[in-house]
Length: 301
Image (cartoon, rainbow, N blue to C red; front, side):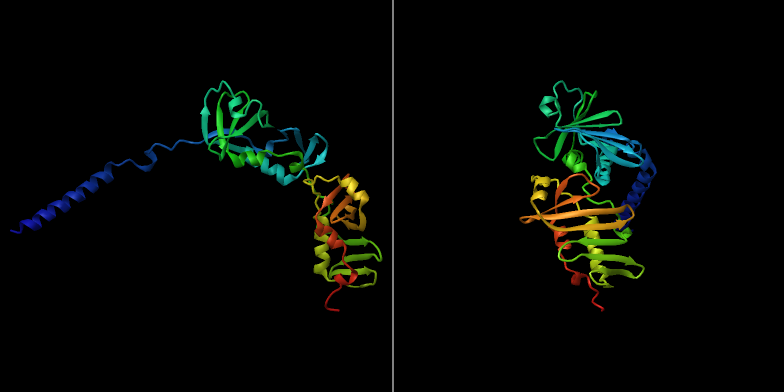
């Protein structure tokens, strides 16, 4: 008898039996204890929110009317809809990385009394404090809740917005694809464009076919002009001292709007017919208006 073969057969049979026993007695996946869930600090439905306040040095209050957000305090301004949407996205489901204290008796040590930033939304006040010693996180709490949490630093960054961060910085409100006429009023000669079904035509100084790509680029630059609120300069004073570059007059879906641009030293400043005040603007705006009629002629002529 081959005892070695018999022994091998017994070992294999035992292994197969062990596998069969394990497969019949192991816990099915659904019976495994679920992993611990994250601690939710704040959960709101962004679509239902109609009022939002972010308090730093200067509190900013926003209200939603007719589907659009407007800044109401410290002064009425149109709001940057995308910036507000970013804030609401962060607040819609804000989770804690960890709970630091269940019942904090002194919130000053976390920079929460007073808080660096306070966000008031849907009747709840979210308090944001100092950065944690290890970095990467900040302390947070809810008014009326004794717990202190930590949240990711980027969440605080997305919520810590000033008035300038939340303002709509557009100087014109026309849609570029809806602009039907553009007039560039400047010396020594004016330039006027008219949109047709075939593209753009030059009406002044001499009727001719325009390079539609060049005119479309001008329209996008004009309708996309933004005020530079980060500049420390006095926009009104610098605009008043500046030398005229040109005044652009656009006709489109929102009527007729104008943008007057001046240059002071190396910087450009603009005054719009739809936004109060004068502001520093990107130099690309001034350079676009400083072009000559021949720069817009079709190359196919």
